[in-house]
Length: 121
Ligand SMILES: CC(=O)c1cc(-c2ccccn2)c2ncccn12
Image (cartoon, rainbow, N blue to C red; front, side, top):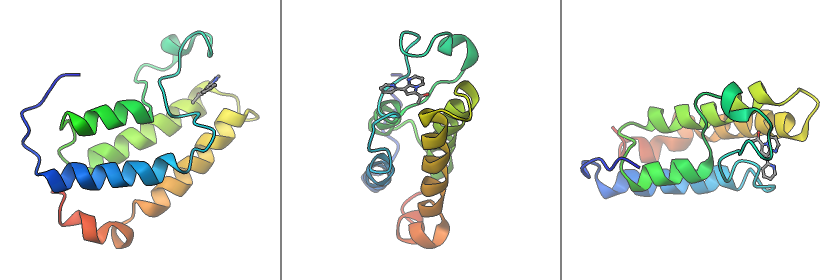
């Protein structure tokens, strides 16, 4: 991925990696671990214009592509809403993404992130 000059203080990427780990634990089937391919999901790349998954988020942390916590949260929401867009309501993927979205947003609230918020601009 495009490498930004490392403008971020280490605490930022440390904080985001910790947060990413918490979110990944909420996806035990690892449905969101890797990019969805057209092989496993026919037509996926035509329906989903901005794919996102946990491995991509991890690369973005490592390449200092997140300047603000909000950008990280937006990618998490994008990953979940992509699954709710492509998959029918009655599928394991749709149900897992809805559950993951709500569980993720519950931990990414100020009172839970307070300690990290002062690290992240
Ligand atoms: C996240 C998602 O939409 C997804 C993950 C998977 C997936 C992820 C890992 C192993 C198998 N399937 C998937 N398969 C078919 C249709 C959609 N998906």
